[in-house]
Image 1 (tube, rainbow, N blue to C red):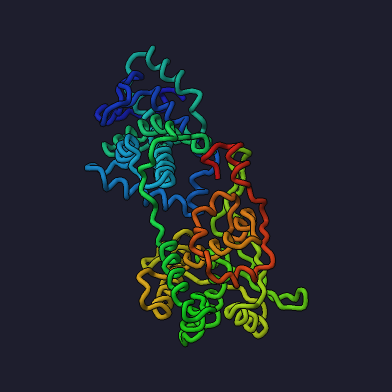
Image 2 (image 1 turned 135 degrees about the vertical axis):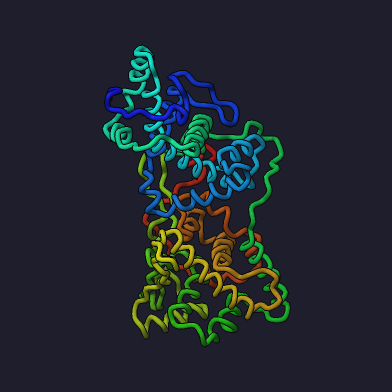
Length: 464
């Protein structure tokens, strides 16, 4: 790359006028060649585990953009990076997970801006430099980073950076230097609170599903004073689901599956699905549910553990009403493959990412469960949702002495025993019917479950 390869740019559009620039530290601070090189290296490193194309295909990139848009609304000039840094000073998030999610989103968006705009900035800076000595100094600094693709970006630039682009680049450079990428989550795993004895002032995360389950538990205990065998799930099935004339066999089978296994609603999307077959074991019929996991990341590197179970199986004896109904449905229809269809495009013809299609499936099933819950429990102040069933299964398994933490993790589709602590408080299922959980005869998953204690010993207390 030589100066003869570059076309002149207007000097007013330059972010910096030489190789030397002001350090970061205040809003609107200029950047230098050295700072841009450092940020460019950080931006390239952010793609080490997953490229932007990978994130777009999975729908994660769209989630990042939505998070950035929410943060931007809190800044007078719509700068999400400034909002994040100001919150970082006093840890202004409800949970560490929320902070990490915002951090991941902004780091990747900042990295994109740096990778797209920095080559144009370098071109403009080289064109602006007047002395040969400074030109050689800048070229010497840039040469290790001028890959063929970067050179092509510089040649293809047909116009200088606009004022908005200059502001975006400066903000992104400062942000990446202050909050460097962590593609393998090394910092997240080793980060510990400086003073573990200090009170945790973070607000508890919203637990609407857990609150609904707690209310249903109280309801069941009260009803048992009159009806000793009362069970809120049996009542939901017999009084609402089994009697609803608007439910076809697929929807009724999906509801039964959620009640029995705690499957995520998104796992009924067409990309995943639940297969049900009937087998005979020990002289009795049993249902086998094969569930394709919706929240999975394979282990790509030694320091980046996988997430979620891609496939898990749960075997259940046909003892409770919904299991008996499923048995009859399989005998009549054959093996079932349960999915919920969703449109591939939006109303205006835009192709929907996978994450949005999965979200629409979850919303659809959520509305269905809420409607049926109001029919069965008209006095319940909480909405019944699919995640209430998931919490209920977890709580029942924790109250049964037949399941250890690794079996519970496998049943929920987790790869670590730590994640299950967010589901189903043991107190929620205490002194309640365990008929559905006692009917579970086998749980298996394709990936080994990492024990929380061993995981923390290896990666730190934030692992999992």
